[in-house]
Length: 98
Image: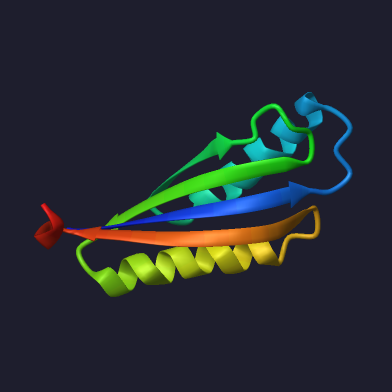
């Protein structure tokens, strides 16, 4: 079993309230999580209108598959007009790391 985690720091363009930010983030989280078996959550900057950090976790039997899933999510986020990706970080764990 291989586990990968992705942290993505975002700027959400044009937000004027936390309610509006959460509506946009909820849609993004559903859309990036739907086509793949992953978990997504907002992990930082919950009280800032135009900033968010998303945490993504993926599990697979192959390290290559985990890497492809995280790369696809990063590409998807970078192509969205309503957000700007400010930074990303990937972290991996495999059964040998016990």
